[in-house]
Image (cartoon, rainbow, N blue to C red; front, top):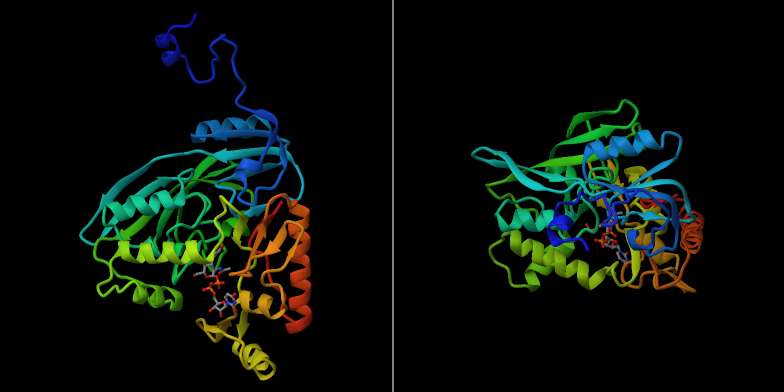
Length: 357
Ligand code: EPU
């Protein structure tokens, strides 16, 4: 019989019977690892909690396709993944430095995003409160420059470290190097599938500068009777909006906004308004207007639509949902129909925000 002492000192990869356990699993179910709750298998699966473990896995499987998983909250599996799925489990959150105005906080790529928001709120570091409760991991956040209620990650990202899988080296990226724009970054374009984000450093405010003018947020703060803003109150308001309007991925499978909001030139927007005087639009910089894709989809009659277990959410049509047993293919096909009808009705081609695998 193995004593307790032996159990505690045994390295993690040695099983009690002294057989060395392979950290790589075969034909592994990804259902618990994607917020759409889609049944799909990975040919190989492993997690990593250090850069050395990651590098070793890349060395061991040089020819196989790889997929880096964070929280699995922004992807849709339409088939099994015939390669190696690697889940980022790099943990840790720490204050790295501070000056009179800012704190610099580093978090491991495998940390939960909302966990970092709470960690900052507890210490009265201000900045991330509008991004409360966004599902997903810290390492995935810069890839699509997450944003909500008037704030984007790029407003608070300072730098990050990423592993270059081609050169087998770790590089530092400043916020400018990341080329962040609306739900976009260098990691979705030039460096797609090349870098793995290991940790991210944020620059947060000691002297608060709140963003509370986003319509829904301002209304919520008002109905809460908030007179003096604080990061905690904004966070509570955001949490209330999200929990009352958006489906909880733990209960109803979804990956947040399925499409991006299209950005039109002023001229295109004016032409659209001639035919659709009620079309909402949010002015952007340099003569562009962002149109809510939710409005376009609702106009086409999809809000609350359901076929089998695949649906378009009843409160927020930008969110496609899996009510239970929908396949990734069924969700994808619904997204194709939505794309086609928005194109036919408005001449606008929506872009998917969710990664289709
Ligand atoms: N709208 C409708 N019908 C609806 C719902 C909304 O017409 O049923 C229109 C309204 O005009 C409303 C506008 O859409 O004013 C904007 O709606 P909302 O504030 O809910 O935001 P969104 O544009 O639909 C974006 C982000 C969300 C983020 C919210 C809040 C994208 C693709 N999505 O959604 O991000 O939480 O703003 O800031 O930009 C995500 O990326 O996964 C995500 C959830």
